[in-house]
Each structure stands twice: as structure tokens, then as C-alpha cells.
Length: 314
Image (cartoon, rainbow, N blue to C red):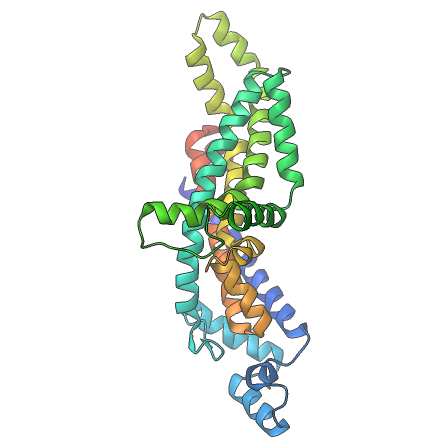
């Protein structure tokens, strides 16, 4: 187990460095001048030059990247002159809000996806299987932002039964659920569809394995057989789940923006619009780190469930 954790951690370091380098380069090629965006395009050239010097934008690109990376390793992601707050403070609150939304979306999406996929897998070729497969394909085909807009039109503008957006975390569970319901469903639709398809495929493949026939020949009951099937079929489901949780924690920019959910997605969207480079770079780093940590946890869970992975590493 320790060997798996060390190997995955060693692989994560160059990935994170590559992500930081790519996003830093992308921020430099965006159109517009961050200094002019900060004080206004109608400012004098002298004022813009002074702001560029204060923000360190006159330094060579490698120097700027090295300074930012060194500060980031020490936990200092800089100061946002646009928000007049430390970037770490902005990211901390936004990450908590996204974690709440992503956690609820993950529980809802993964649970429903596993249930639907299991029902389709054990009833392969039946009407239930065809209906669930059609639903999964539809879920993969509908963009989350399109579903979000439809839900806003139906439940907020037309029926007026759910709030149109925002996050309420301290006004009781009922009000919290009313604000959470639409972004949770819109954000988790793809998770439900992917998890259902992967679960179905894994269940069908495992049921066709020789050991299942052996268990049945020994007279093992249906419940015990299903337990063995699930244990062997869960590995690919966990892998997909890790990717989906990482995506949800990364923040769905469009869903959070449409529902005005104050998470990482909305923060990045506003930061890109304002050319707030430090916030974008810090948010990208946090998202990448979160994604890596989630998948590390999933790998350890897989190794715990499937001894073959531990033997492969050893």
C-alpha cells in the first residue's frame, strides 16, 4: 500500500509542474493588458507602466514563473489587486462552496449511476436494460449547461418553485436543498450516465467469468454470488468515480456561473473576465492538486479492495 502511495505521489509532482507551466503560458497570450484592465483603458501610459511594474509584469516570463512557483510552494499564492484580498482567502471560501456542491453531486450521481448500472447489468437484454442504456446515452448527449438553462426556465421562471441561483448554507436544511437541487442535478447528469454505463459493462463482464459459474455450481446463493460479483466488478467503477469526483471538485464553470454558485468555477470565470492572473493561476493549481489527491485516494481504495493491484506493485 505504501509503495502505491509513494509511486502515485512521485507521478503527481511532474504533472502539477506541467499544469502550472501550461496555465502560466496561457495567461500570457490572452488578449489585453492586465494593468490596463485593472486601472482602465483610458489611463495614461505612465500610469499603466507604473502598475505593470508594481505587478511585476515587466519581468521576463521565466523570472515571473519562478517567483510565482516559489511563492506557491511556500503557500503564498499572491494578492489580488482586483478583489483586494489574498488569493488564498478567495480560493479557500470558493473551494468550500464547490466541495459542498461537488460532494452532494458525487453522492447523488455515483449512487444513482451504480444502482442503474447494476440493474441493467443483471437484467441484460431486458426492457429495463434498454431503458437504462437509453437514459445513459441521453445523459451523455445533453450538455450540463443546456440542462441547467432548461431547469431555470421550468422550475424558476415558469413554475417559480425553486430559487434561480445562489448558495444558502446557513438558513436551514430545507432552504439549502432548494438552492442545491438544480445545480446538483445539472452537474451530476454526466456522472450518472458514465457511472451507469461503466457499472453495467463491468457487471456483465464479471457475470460471464468462470468463477461465477463455479460459485453457482457449488450451490452458493444469489445474494452471496452478487456480493462476489460486486467485489470483482467495482474496480473500473472506482476508477471512473475518481475521475468524476475530480471533475466535480474542479468546479463546473458553466453550471456554477448559470446558477451563481460562489465556487471555484464562478471564481475562475470572473477572474478570467477581469484578467486577474494570480487568481486564475492559483485556482488552476488548487483544482489540479485536488484532482491528483482524489485519484490517489481512489487508487488506494482499489488496492485495498483488489489484492491483485498490491501484488502488481510489489
